[in-house]
Image (tube, rainbow, N blue to C red; front, side, top):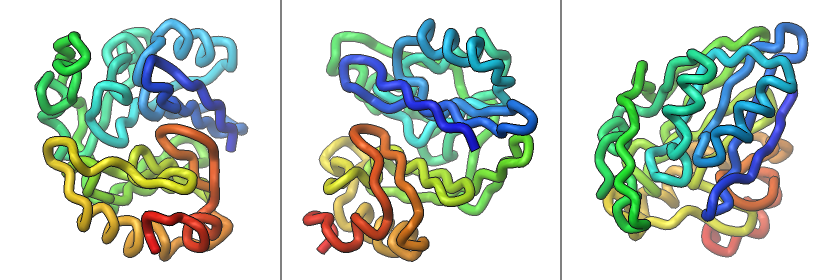
Length: 206
Protein backbone atom coordinates (compact mmCIF):
# COMPACT_ATOMS: atom_id res chain seq x y z
CA UNK A 1 0.00 0.00 0.00
CA UNK A 2 1.24 3.45 -0.95
CA UNK A 3 0.24 6.32 1.36
CA UNK A 4 1.00 9.95 0.53
CA UNK A 5 0.08 12.62 3.08
CA UNK A 6 -0.68 16.20 2.07
CA UNK A 7 -1.35 18.69 4.87
CA UNK A 8 -3.59 21.36 3.37
CA UNK A 9 -5.45 24.56 4.15
CA UNK A 10 -5.56 26.98 7.04
CA UNK A 11 -6.72 24.21 9.39
CA UNK A 12 -3.76 21.98 8.44
CA UNK A 13 -5.95 18.98 7.65
CA UNK A 14 -4.40 15.78 6.36
CA UNK A 15 -5.44 14.67 2.89
CA UNK A 16 -4.36 11.13 2.07
CA UNK A 17 -3.68 9.56 -1.31
CA UNK A 18 -3.78 5.80 -0.85
CA UNK A 19 -2.90 3.56 -3.77
CA UNK A 20 -2.45 -0.08 -4.71
CA UNK A 21 1.20 -0.53 -5.73
CA UNK A 22 0.37 -3.21 -8.30
CA UNK A 23 -2.44 -1.42 -10.16
CA UNK A 24 -1.94 2.27 -9.17
CA UNK A 25 -5.67 2.43 -8.41
CA UNK A 26 -6.16 4.94 -5.61
CA UNK A 27 -8.50 6.85 -3.33
CA UNK A 28 -8.34 10.44 -2.15
CA UNK A 29 -9.35 10.79 1.49
CA UNK A 30 -10.51 14.22 2.69
CA UNK A 31 -9.46 16.74 0.04
CA UNK A 32 -10.00 19.73 2.28
CA UNK A 33 -8.14 22.46 0.38
CA UNK A 34 -5.30 23.07 -2.09
CA UNK A 35 -6.97 21.25 -4.97
CA UNK A 36 -4.17 22.06 -7.42
CA UNK A 37 -1.59 20.55 -5.05
CA UNK A 38 -3.65 17.41 -4.61
CA UNK A 39 -4.23 16.99 -8.33
CA UNK A 40 -0.55 17.56 -9.08
CA UNK A 41 0.41 14.86 -6.56
CA UNK A 42 -2.05 12.44 -8.14
CA UNK A 43 -0.73 13.10 -11.62
CA UNK A 44 2.95 12.95 -10.69
CA UNK A 45 2.37 9.61 -8.96
CA UNK A 46 0.49 8.09 -11.88
CA UNK A 47 -2.46 7.19 -9.66
CA UNK A 48 -5.87 6.36 -11.12
CA UNK A 49 -8.36 7.69 -8.60
CA UNK A 50 -11.35 5.39 -8.12
CA UNK A 51 -13.05 7.20 -5.22
CA UNK A 52 -12.98 10.46 -3.30
CA UNK A 53 -13.84 9.67 0.32
CA UNK A 54 -14.91 12.11 3.04
CA UNK A 55 -14.51 10.92 6.62
CA UNK A 56 -17.04 13.60 7.58
CA UNK A 57 -18.57 16.78 6.23
CA UNK A 58 -16.69 19.72 7.75
CA UNK A 59 -15.15 22.38 5.51
CA UNK A 60 -11.53 21.47 6.27
CA UNK A 61 -12.15 17.97 4.90
CA UNK A 62 -14.45 18.72 1.93
CA UNK A 63 -13.25 22.10 0.63
CA UNK A 64 -11.58 20.74 -2.51
CA UNK A 65 -14.13 17.99 -3.23
CA UNK A 66 -15.57 19.52 -6.38
CA UNK A 67 -12.25 20.51 -7.96
CA UNK A 68 -10.66 17.12 -7.33
CA UNK A 69 -13.75 15.33 -8.60
CA UNK A 70 -13.74 17.42 -11.76
CA UNK A 71 -10.03 16.77 -12.35
CA UNK A 72 -10.18 13.02 -11.75
CA UNK A 73 -13.72 12.05 -12.73
CA UNK A 74 -13.94 9.99 -9.54
CA UNK A 75 -17.20 9.67 -7.59
CA UNK A 76 -17.55 11.29 -4.16
CA UNK A 77 -18.61 9.14 -1.21
CA UNK A 78 -19.66 10.15 2.32
CA UNK A 79 -21.66 8.48 5.09
CA UNK A 80 -25.40 8.91 4.69
CA UNK A 81 -25.73 10.75 8.03
CA UNK A 82 -23.33 13.49 6.86
CA UNK A 83 -24.66 13.84 3.31
CA UNK A 84 -26.50 17.11 4.01
CA UNK A 85 -23.34 18.73 5.38
CA UNK A 86 -21.95 18.90 1.85
CA UNK A 87 -24.55 21.48 0.83
CA UNK A 88 -25.26 23.24 4.15
CA UNK A 89 -22.77 26.03 5.00
CA UNK A 90 -23.95 26.19 8.61
CA UNK A 91 -23.55 22.47 9.27
CA UNK A 92 -20.24 22.13 7.40
CA UNK A 93 -19.01 25.15 9.42
CA UNK A 94 -17.90 27.13 6.36
CA UNK A 95 -20.26 29.99 7.17
CA UNK A 96 -18.23 30.71 10.30
CA UNK A 97 -15.03 31.17 8.30
CA UNK A 98 -16.60 33.72 5.97
CA UNK A 99 -17.11 31.29 3.11
CA UNK A 100 -20.46 29.68 2.35
CA UNK A 101 -19.33 26.36 0.90
CA UNK A 102 -21.86 24.25 -0.97
CA UNK A 103 -20.30 21.17 -2.55
CA UNK A 104 -21.93 18.93 -5.09
CA UNK A 105 -23.98 16.15 -3.47
CA UNK A 106 -22.32 12.79 -2.99
CA UNK A 107 -22.43 10.27 -5.81
CA UNK A 108 -22.77 7.40 -3.34
CA UNK A 109 -23.70 7.19 0.34
CA UNK A 110 -21.82 4.94 2.72
CA UNK A 111 -23.04 2.85 5.64
CA UNK A 112 -21.28 1.02 8.43
CA UNK A 113 -19.79 -2.24 7.18
CA UNK A 114 -19.52 -1.19 3.54
CA UNK A 115 -16.36 -2.19 1.70
CA UNK A 116 -14.65 -0.67 -1.32
CA UNK A 117 -12.27 -2.59 -3.58
CA UNK A 118 -9.49 -0.43 -5.02
CA UNK A 119 -7.08 -2.49 -7.05
CA UNK A 120 -5.84 -5.12 -4.60
CA UNK A 121 -6.79 -3.00 -1.58
CA UNK A 122 -9.99 -3.38 0.40
CA UNK A 123 -11.28 -0.43 2.44
CA UNK A 124 -13.76 -1.14 5.22
CA UNK A 125 -16.12 1.55 6.50
CA UNK A 126 -16.42 1.93 10.28
CA UNK A 127 -19.16 4.33 11.38
CA UNK A 128 -17.74 6.32 14.30
CA UNK A 129 -20.20 9.11 15.15
CA UNK A 130 -19.55 11.70 17.81
CA UNK A 131 -17.57 14.40 16.02
CA UNK A 132 -20.36 14.46 13.43
CA UNK A 133 -23.36 12.15 13.07
CA UNK A 134 -21.88 10.50 9.98
CA UNK A 135 -18.22 10.42 10.90
CA UNK A 136 -16.39 7.35 9.63
CA UNK A 137 -12.99 5.74 9.80
CA UNK A 138 -11.56 3.74 6.92
CA UNK A 139 -9.62 0.56 7.61
CA UNK A 140 -7.29 -0.87 4.97
CA UNK A 141 -4.88 -3.65 5.92
CA UNK A 142 -3.15 -2.37 9.09
CA UNK A 143 -3.88 1.31 8.40
CA UNK A 144 -6.80 3.22 9.90
CA UNK A 145 -7.72 6.62 8.44
CA UNK A 146 -9.48 8.09 11.43
CA UNK A 147 -10.68 11.50 10.24
CA UNK A 148 -11.48 13.67 13.25
CA UNK A 149 -12.49 10.77 15.49
CA UNK A 150 -9.07 9.95 16.97
CA UNK A 151 -5.79 11.86 16.98
CA UNK A 152 -2.38 11.26 18.50
CA UNK A 153 -2.97 11.89 22.22
CA UNK A 154 -6.29 13.55 21.50
CA UNK A 155 -9.81 13.12 20.12
CA UNK A 156 -12.14 15.08 17.88
CA UNK A 157 -14.22 17.97 19.15
CA UNK A 158 -17.81 17.23 20.02
CA UNK A 159 -19.12 20.77 20.57
CA UNK A 160 -20.01 21.43 16.93
CA UNK A 161 -23.60 20.96 15.68
CA UNK A 162 -24.40 17.24 15.64
CA UNK A 163 -21.51 16.34 17.93
CA UNK A 164 -21.83 14.28 21.10
CA UNK A 165 -18.98 13.56 23.51
CA UNK A 166 -20.29 10.32 24.95
CA UNK A 167 -21.06 8.99 21.49
CA UNK A 168 -17.53 9.87 20.37
CA UNK A 169 -15.94 8.08 23.33
CA UNK A 170 -18.10 5.03 22.71
CA UNK A 171 -17.10 5.01 19.03
CA UNK A 172 -13.42 5.08 19.95
CA UNK A 173 -13.63 2.43 22.64
CA UNK A 174 -16.00 0.05 20.88
CA UNK A 175 -14.99 0.46 17.23
CA UNK A 176 -11.32 1.51 17.26
CA UNK A 177 -9.78 0.20 20.46
CA UNK A 178 -10.92 -3.30 19.53
CA UNK A 179 -8.52 -3.24 16.56
CA UNK A 180 -5.02 -4.77 16.89
CA UNK A 181 -2.58 -2.61 18.84
CA UNK A 182 -0.22 -2.45 15.86
CA UNK A 183 -2.85 -0.79 13.66
CA UNK A 184 -1.38 2.47 12.38
CA UNK A 185 -3.65 5.48 12.76
CA UNK A 186 -3.59 8.22 10.12
CA UNK A 187 -5.65 11.06 11.63
CA UNK A 188 -7.37 14.04 10.05
CA UNK A 189 -4.91 16.41 11.75
CA UNK A 190 -1.48 15.94 13.24
CA UNK A 191 0.95 13.06 13.37
CA UNK A 192 0.49 9.35 12.83
CA UNK A 193 0.04 7.09 15.86
CA UNK A 194 -1.06 3.53 16.67
CA UNK A 195 -4.07 2.00 18.36
CA UNK A 196 -1.81 0.55 21.06
CA UNK A 197 -0.26 3.92 21.79
CA UNK A 198 -3.64 5.61 22.12
CA UNK A 199 -5.13 2.83 24.28
CA UNK A 200 -2.25 3.25 26.68
CA UNK A 201 -1.64 6.98 26.65
CA UNK A 202 -4.57 9.01 25.28
CA UNK A 203 -5.71 11.16 28.24
CA UNK A 204 -9.19 11.75 26.76
CA UNK A 205 -10.08 8.03 26.62
CA UNK A 206 -8.99 6.85 30.04
